[in-house]
Image 1 (tube, helix red, strand yellow):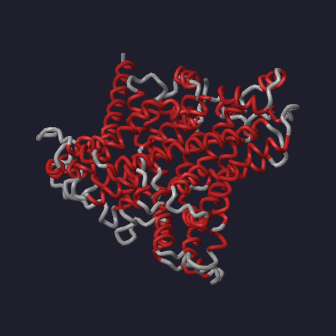
Image 2: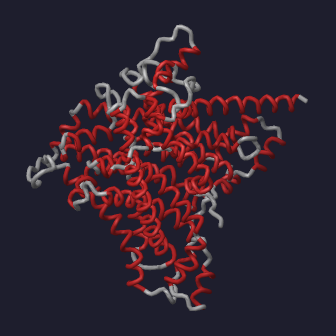
Image 3: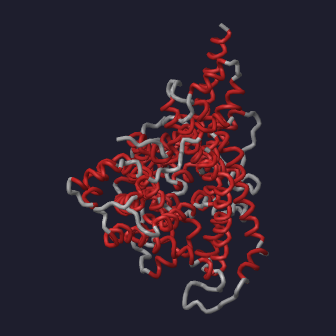
Length: 279
Length: 318
């Protein structure tokens, strides 16, 4: 009996802690979402609360009817798609030779690539800036895309390599006996098998590229080329006292991120934790 | 303990079974075709630029015109006498220490509470605690600007309703408090990430071990102290590594929320590097800062891997 009481108490305590922490974590986001459907005056007097003067759709309409928003969206999508596609193609090619083809200098090259895991892009601001400038990619979306691909590659290769290495040799041997070329094995057998790992890599790249602020901040001066992350900052500067509108903008970016998480949860978690990626 | 250790370290060295040369796998052309595109992007946009920091740091250069004014170690001498730089280094180390002392234990505690699948609502709590990790840093910064707003900001209003006679705090304008304000945002954004790693580590610990100890009369505290935490060792060591590296690369949140201010009170190495190198166009001097940051990261990474992480991956330990 005491045991049962003790465990009930324990469970209650666990829930209490979880609920309190979750509320603290959620409250800034909830404030933003609620703030976005209230008037600026309401937000200023009480930051947290339900709308008392009706839902202020105008906060959203002002943003959504502005072609600038859609242009930012287009740039963000372009960067995200390009980074993800390039990263997937290049990292799967690399992971393939690093696991299934033997050649001299393989270990060395892999170590060089892994070094990239240690260097966050922040460290390389100046040289990256100079390199982009000398390649004439300042004010070009490709000047954002290529550094993001380069800095994402080592991580992707490590994830894919971990998967490729566990594909049984017998499968490869059998495919060669059946007349498959190395390329054929890679494209028709290995990649389809590796779909969960490829999805995990893609999902992580989508998050990284969509959220990038840093490289775009460094490379893009022309507002027409900006992604949403730079656009929202400029918006915040322009309407710095109109909190309701800024919260609407924030909400427009937060909701898709939450939906994306719900949709891709399994792949985000396994990709980050290096968990078992089964088919 | 050694009996347990065998099972602690699930990450065995990868088998080298795939190493043999395949008869169909010919050769240089194929290897080149597979390697070249990826390595080219990697070298052109990561490796080569990074190596350029060192030579650049020996010049005085405003980024325009040719590189002619060689000044040797002068940038470094100047750096070591630069009080703002010293402050920035201190602040970076403070953020790192706070991450290790507060953020990681918090993440670990939450992971232990969420446990391994017997708690109702586990997935919901995990989602709530993790989701800030996938928001972009700019979103995190903007949301928190309004939490820390001195007049009627969420933090002051909430504290005011809990504590009578509470005097509103100027979170980001107070030199003594600003770094803690920044650190709160970093914790909010990253605690879920570390929690997820711990939860994955917990999944790998066989429940029977803990059950067996309980049957033998061990208290919950002892189970935690002698079984769960030691078995989680490799995950903990990994999160320490990621957390230290992550602390030194904090840039966007600080840049957006305070620009390193007020009066450099939240300046860290990365924001100072940006200010000097990009905004003031002192590329040689900025490169010297980059080289120092680079050296800190490199020494830590290599040292930590050699000394601490080694046993998680080397066969001798198993």
